[in-house]
Amino acid sequence: MLTSRTHHAMTRSRYIWLILILGGLTALTPFSIDMYLPGFPAIAKDLSTSAAKVSLSLSSFFIGIALGQLLYGPLLDRFGRKKPLYIGLSVYILASMGCVFVHSINGLISLRIIQALGSCAASVVSITLVRDLFPVEDNAKVFALLILVLGASPMIAPTAGGYIISSYGWHAVFIVLTLICVSIFICSIFWLPPGNPPDLERSLKPIPITKSFLAVFTNPQFYTYCLTGALAFTGLFAYVAGSPVVFMSVFGVSQKTYGWIFAMLSIGFIGSSQLNNLLLKRFNSHQILRFILICYSVLAILFFLFSQEDWLSLPVTMIFLFGLLACVGIANPNTAALTLAPFSKNAGTASSLMGAIQMGLGSLISVFISLFEKPSLTPLAIAFLMSSLLAFFMLKLGSRQIKSPVREGAAVVAGH
Image 1: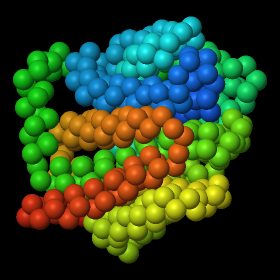
Image 2: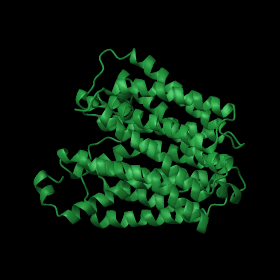
Image 3: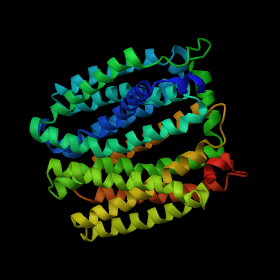
């Protein structure tokens, strides 16, 4: 670990270089999700299927991420940080190259699961290495920089993907992703510190790991806020899965224009999550969450009604989606803070389980979107309606089971 003294002694160039590598690891997953979205119609045409069926390749990616969340935590503790990372990046490169030469939609769906398992290693390792390499007092600052990378990725990736696909075809996206991963791999080998040493006493047996996850999940505060947050967050997954069909098939925008629209609407999600920091100065996370879920539900109901009455033009749809994504962006950090508040020693287990549940439900909602073969706004409207109402009812029902909520850090929750 870099102690405060060694950290201050670190040259500025080395510090920046380390942040860039960690940022690259962090960005690999969102780029893998967002960059190929403008290519849905082209992929459907080349593989003789529908754009809705192509969205199953997105669902399979989410499934791979959910599985990877549970897989890499124990592996990183047992074998150290870099060996699992190298294996994950190698798997990602092979799967990405496979996507370049795939000739069927089922092959693409299968390869995307494998690609996700590889990319998940990068995101989990980047978070773990921040804790390993930087002093505790600097962790928040480093995480803030990585969050900027995460926030910028949904704005850059689909826009870049739109230009790449319109110029070179959708296969080129996976070539670019392969080259990005190879660059990250090389940098990780030569310039990424190893982090904490392996813990050979760490058990990888299924029973102890399962007991650890069960102990976390049966905590009422965990399952209440985790499920509330995961249900609300399915709105974002529905948007990612459904937006290519909505904008390019229903409204007929070009691949390049779709990339720009996706980037603009991402501002709603990213900006609202930053607005949440201001709200925390006056309200606690539960108060913010309860209010924002009411707003989310009202917007989702109106969006559904407008879709059924055929009142949704392109500008009106964008306004609705901006508001819905903003609600999700505010709900997400508050549910995460309240979910993890009761845990200290096993925060890693709680965090990985929360991520797995989030991705698991996200994959289900994206599968739901793919069931509708005919291009329409209805699937997305229904998905937002289910997301908002189920999240609100989960919060109401689950709150009754929490006898004395832990607000951990009332500090974190209250924003002090």
